[in-house]
Image 1 (tube, rainbow, N blue to C red):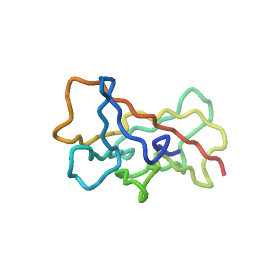
Image 2 (cartoon, rainbow, N blue to C red):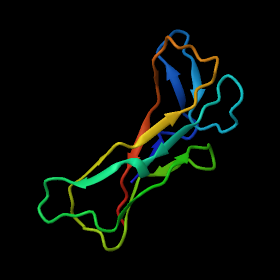
Image 3 (tube, one colour):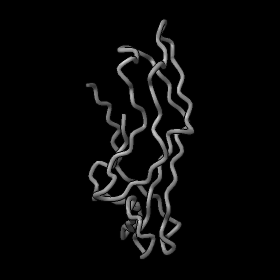
Image 4 (cartoon, one colour):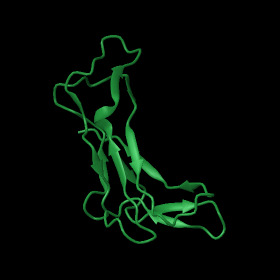
Length: 122
């Protein structure tokens, strides 16, 4: 299971007029539109849900990583190994997400970015 922006070129967009924007994946840490999101699934809690007989054997949590356009566009949250249950009911809570924000970003706006959660079976 992984998390990514809808497009690697997407940016945070404000609800204000005119709209302000800043990056979620720019590690340069300079300029008035740079910013970088870090996701840390390793601090989250993974438990089983109501499924009788389901377990979390051979399911590993991803490690902390920061988006970087063209270098790291998707971050792994969970990975199920070959010995994991084929059917399950899992609860994954408490993923840490932080975002650096450019210093000149207006604070009186709400910002949004489309993110995609992908679950891939193999």
